[in-house]
Image 1 (cartoon, rainbow, N blue to C red):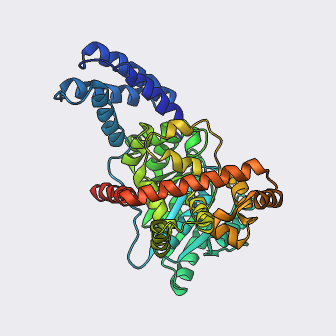
Image 2: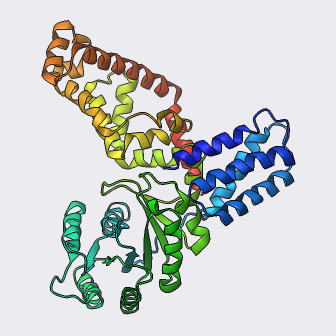
Image 3: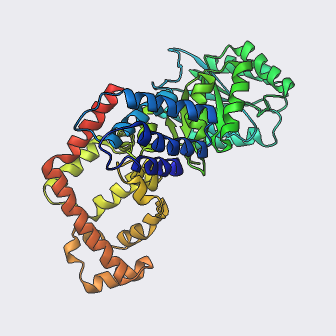
Length: 446
C-alpha cells in the first residue's frame, strides 16, 4: 500500500539534499516531482496542484530553523498537509448507548458484505457489543449464504427472510427482532448498486427513511482509484452518508482514493480493509497514514496490535523468564503464534520506522513460519526447555522428523541463541518499556 507513492516522494525530497536553504528554484523543482508522484497515485490534477501550491507557500513563508535542513522542513510540511488532506482528526463510528442501527451502502463488488462481517467482529471484540447482521441484499445470488458463512466465522447472529424480496420490510423486521433478542447493534447489508441506477438508489433511500440509521457507511474499493472518489460524491449527494470505508488497501492500489476522498465528499474515512481475514480491518488515523506514506512507520499501531494479542499476564511471565535467562523454545513458539495473530508479518515489519523500504521486495508471509514450527515441534519437551542438550545426533533426528535438513536446524538454533541475547539486552536496558511508553504518549496526543 502506497509503496510507489512513498518511493516517488522520497526521490522528490532528494532534490533538496545538500541545499543550504529553501529557494524559489529548488522548491519548485522538488514540488514538481511531488505533484507528479501524486498524479501517478491517481490523485486528481486539481487536488495535486492545490496541495503543492500550499506546500510551496508554507515552505517559503516558514521561519528557517538553523538546526533543521531544508529537506527535513519540506517533509514536515508535506506530512502536515497530507494529514489535513486526509481529514486531520480521527473520526469514531457513531455508536449509541443502548441501540445502534448501521446501514452499509456501496457499489457492486466493493466488498460490502465482507466489511459487514468485519465490522460485526470489530464491534464484538473491541466494543463489547452484541451485533445482529441483516441480509438486505435480495438480488445477488448467494449473497445471503455468504453473510451466513461470515457470521459463523465471527460468531454473531444473522437475520434473513429468504422468501421476502422487499429489503425495506426485512430491515424493519430485523430491528424488531434485534430489540426482542438483546442485540444492541444492527448492521444492515444492502445490495450493490450503481449511483446512476435511480431505482436502486430510491430503494436504499427508502431503507434509510424506514430504519433511521444512526450511521451510514459507504464502502469503496480503493483499487478503483479516482473513480471511487467520483462514485462516493454521487452517493453522498443522494444518500448523505456519515463515513467512508476503503477496502482492499492491501492490494495493488495507488492510494489516490485514500488521499483525496475526504476533501471531495467532506466525510471522514472511518475504516480501511487491509486483507481478506475477518480481523483485517483497521480504524483510519490520518496522521498514522501520513507517517506510513512518508516512510516514518507506524509504531503506535504496531504497539496496539501487540497489546491486543499478547496476554498481559503471559507478558509478565515471559519478562521474568527473560530476566532469569530461562527463555526457551516453548516461549519462542508462543511468541511466534502471537505474532501470527497480529496480522501479515510484512505489514507489521513495515510499521517499524525505516523498515518499509527494506522489506518491500522481500517475500515475507505467515507461511514462512511453518518450517520453524515444524523444527520446534519435532523436538522433545526436554529439548525445547533445555536447548543446550541439542547435540549432533539430536539435531539430525529433528531434521528428519521436521522434513528439513541439518543446516536449517543449526541455523534456527543459532538464531534462537541470538534472539535470546538480544531480548536480554533489550530487557536490561528497558528499551521495550520505553518504546511502549512513547507510543502511548503519542496516542494520547491524538
